[in-house]
Length: 379
Image (cartoon, rainbow, N blue to C red; front, side, top):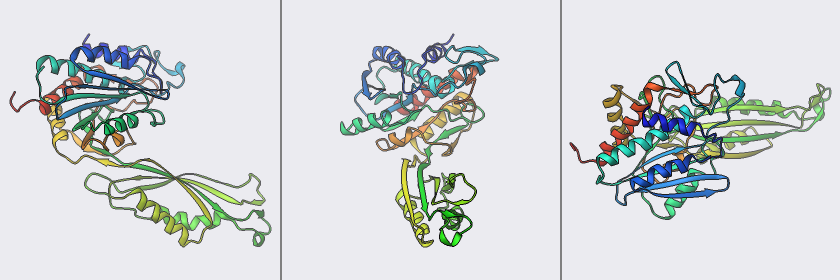
């Protein structure tokens, strides 16, 4: 059994359902300290975070990830116990196999191999690991990033081990993510008997023209890396439950997934302008879940793309699709952040898995990327 596979199985066996770490990070510390890493546990609430660094010079290359996993769902629907790593049909099954304990194991073993071969490499290597990525994400990576910023620790490159590949290992690198911003809109009317509409004011009727305009609005055209910004309604709640009552208010939940072509403030202003144009009496509460980030094609994506091609022969594509990730926090203190990991088809599902044939190549890609970034050309 390869060392990467063995470490992956050990981590899967620890039932670290968010925000629990269940000793995963202690396992990493035991492996990193002998390599010369200074390891710091940063506790915030119920969340355990790890910052580890080898070296003091720049450039600083950071591997980032999370030890927490989502809940299993109905255990009786799994073909094998979710926290008992199991081989079947050429795959490794277990919660976290794809998201993202294999990536973390591959980070560590890649670093072990790199340091053993090049103990006097230039620059530094860091690990930023949290147990809060799958939860509220308020006590995890963002806390560590704030501390690093206060200490003026300069990150140069960061690879987040999220499962980004679509069909085969290496076909997709995420070089950015869209921002997410939600709104809870309450349009107010006057409740009354449905047989006497002249004595009431139906907020559903009042809201519909504005909602139609919001749905039809072109918020931006996107750019070379992003699709246009999307506005979507997720819930509409109105009425008392009675069929003869005009409700006093209607509540609409909506969300923006927005690109770097727009700002949160600009989108908010435009929404308010449309609502005000329709002379609605309303309340609107905004929640910004994350701002967009983007790493244009360059040093880090090139180094990773070259490593992928050298290991697998796959020509990778840059993408900004998908949901949010902790990359949004790291991008505030690091100029180049990308996400790369195994295929994501089974993440968060029953019988989550990774194909065994991808585990060691993933480790080799991470090692080759370190070589590309931290060794003089040709060494």
